[in-house]
Length: 578
Ligand SMILES: Nc1ncnc2c1ncn2[C@@H]1O[C@H](COP(=O)(O)OP(=O)(O)OP(=O)(O)O)[C@@H](O)[C@H]1O
Image 1 (cartoon, rainbow, N blue to C red):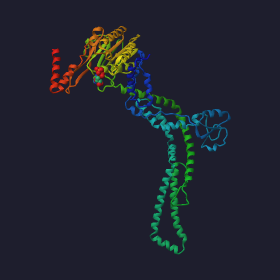
Image 2: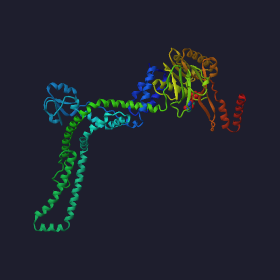
Image 3: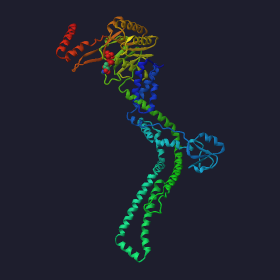
Image 4: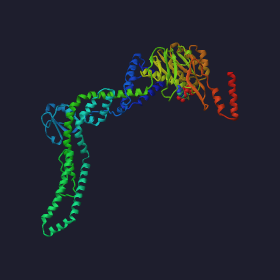
């Protein structure tokens, strides 16, 4: 039983959804909004009210920062080209069906693969499950989304519900070592080039020192040895330097070996200065390292996954729950200061309602239908239980805005959400109509269209609230009184609730004794001589339109001859009021 909305009421519903939506921080969360479409079902509204009463207050605003860090974690089935799975003939079909990697019944060609898995005792022993064949498909997405897991853990802390994410993160720590080496592998060329540069620098320093020492007394000794033909001593001398250089090379290689976790022999020993690394050796090193890391990552992933696997269903739940939290937080932000309407029978009323899209609005109280006990506003003594109300008054007084506010409150109430008012009473409706004034539309076409939709709203039965903004603007005043008068009688007979904005209050009042006529009036002029409007309609009182105040404003703004004329007109008003 969804509440029926006409197109303009629907537009307001949409703008409310947009307001909530723009407060969401995660893309997937807006689907929650679909669960709260306006409904006519009293019980359903009450259930939603309970949900919105209980949940949003639990949610702390700090959550937002963590919510925005959450990304979906997607586990994708993928075909891995780095492994071959060797199985028995009987398992072949099942294994191939998994579609995770190459499957074979023989060892043939298996040396082409860094990873050889098997159910029949070759290579690494496994069972025929995705988590054993390709544990990386689970582990890598988790590893890459550690930030999301971190955020989930923090969110868990904030809402007082332990998150499995902390446990998963703890387990993932086991992978740190192999991942670190993986990163080194990715930057192997730079790493080697850097070592090479560093090494050559140190060797050149050494050679420089050597040449310096040689330039002193040693040089004379050296020449002496040369003269005496004592070559052995000379070679010893050079040999010492050579040994020192080799030490430096070994040292550099050991450092690389240590950080890569693999024995490294890179630098050529033929040419000692500058030392160079043959590119094919880097390639070989890369291949070897790749193979080793593949195996290691596989084994570690499998081991860690065994412990993480049982936690994944809860992780999924928590990721879904994050969207609900996001939604609840958005609702909480949106509905700050709102209150839950009472569901009752007799129309709609609210105290100090605040238009959602007007900044700093003047709060307005209003009622159509039965006046609830507790409805407290200036002039209530003039309010009966009128179901048909004619709203009159000053230009730009806020009449349209009041109809919009009523639509907003009605829509929110039927969504089960709190409404922007201090107190509110809303009867669950079957249909809500809002007809805007058609400003630019003149002529028979516009009149016909407007008349048709008004009549469509009046046909049938049920609980209806019909809000109409200035219908007469598109036809002559005389005809308008007849048409509106008759249509409002029908509405009254059918028990519909109607608020209609009209400048024909005086005439309509005579036609429709059952209707209430309210007025929005100007209070006076401000210091800049602009009209001050009191947005609060006065109940049961026709709103004077504002020509007098406009004349006064002009009389005070103008000078000279013009001013004299305005003052004279103003005096005419004053005489009339006498
Ligand atoms: N409660 C309010 N508090 C503050 N500003 C308001 C309020 N209601 C309306 N306004 C502002 O007053 C201006 C006129 O409002 P609105 O268009 O609703 O008046 P109106 O009576 O329908 O005018 P018109 O006679 O031209 O149809 C708008 O700019 C609106 O934002």
